[in-house]
Length: 316
Image 1 (cartoon, helix red, strand yellow):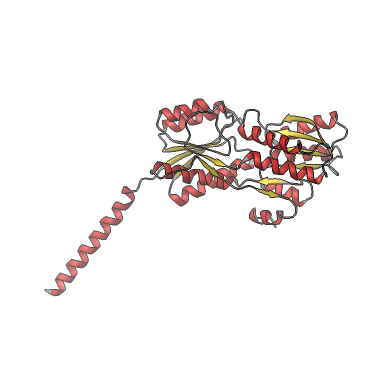
Image 2 (cartoon, one colour):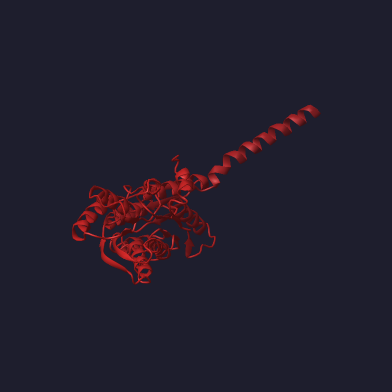
């Protein structure tokens, strides 16, 4: 009789464990969030995609990544937001291509009750839970200051700006300008948009080379423009003796620094920018407090410390 009681207890315990195991997944909601970036041509946005999806796997969150077919097209970004709203996602992490132009899309998400967090680039309207990213003004100021110090406070420079209307481009340009203004011996010959794109950076640089027979440095709002500028300078035989700076810290930029072509960039940890934004979004959805500003630390990269970053990218 005692043996039967023990067997019954074992069977009952097994049934209870089966019930708990079966019920657990059903009781835990899997969230779905959208990530909208500016494009998937620039490696930087692919790093953001990777960072968001890595945190998604860690938190058991489904991440849908969308990007315009035409790079930096805000109308396509708004349509992507409308698509995510129709899918009834739990939240959206947004990298605006145009800080003003994206506002109608944010307002549509607000009306649908879907929380929005901006990452990397701020929006200039609508309700957002938080902004996650590097302080672009401070980072750009440090890059331009480094270039000015390498020039010993004297010389002629040109600036390649990003996409007009994007908060990142605006803040970086202001950071460059304010830093260079402290060096009266440095003259800015020209400052032109190259839309954060490598091909555009090369084209704009070719035109500037024709306009100005002499300049000492090219300060660029991102690495892709800087790498395009380097191609143009190299082809014209003017790369040697010209300082070129970038911003972002992508793999190609790190390799260019190691090769002695690009002098400096600013690593702004795109994986963390997107990953921290996903974490903050889930915290907000689950009712935990989220600050309205989450700062991701940027790092100035030169030949002195590039080896560690090359190792991070798997380059030996």
